[in-house]
Image (cartoon, rainbow, N blue to C red):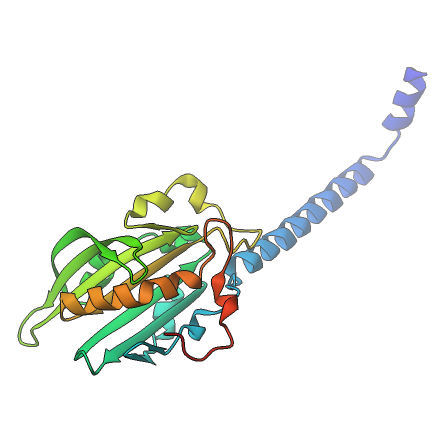
Length: 243
């Protein structure tokens, strides 16, 4: 039996074997390209929050905000799934603060986007950084970093930037908390609760950024999944103003 089978196999033309091998090789290449194309599409498609950051309240107490556009090329480099860049002015308190919020369900894209890197790249001189804490209106303690910059003469200007992160619902000021190997894998499942959000509040006066952080941080947290994956913005997404 074995000898007969071997004889029949031996009679298969070599050209047919080579042809079959070539077809299998082509099919494997096509399958790889299809899978690679689908993975690229998944990776490049933004993972949307239940409520977009553009719905963040324009009026918060005495603060009135106005969106500040970010050039498309900078958006592409940042690679975030959603962001908000808005200037808030409190005329009664004679204060202003710019709030920048960036959300990424692919945390590896957030690495390197730190004030002491981005501001210096924009021509600012980094003077110092301090570890600090802000207490929100509800009493929540917010660990943060406060960065001090200045623009050299002749256009001398000072800027203070309060920076912190939200990692899967947890507040932190430490970037190393999402820089491990596990965070570098693509979020193929599109899980909105596996994320990093960066919050930067900047102004010329430290008191302004601390006041803005105290008034706005709880609202910021409402837009992101908490430790249980719950997003509270759904409770007021139809409201134009939240105070």
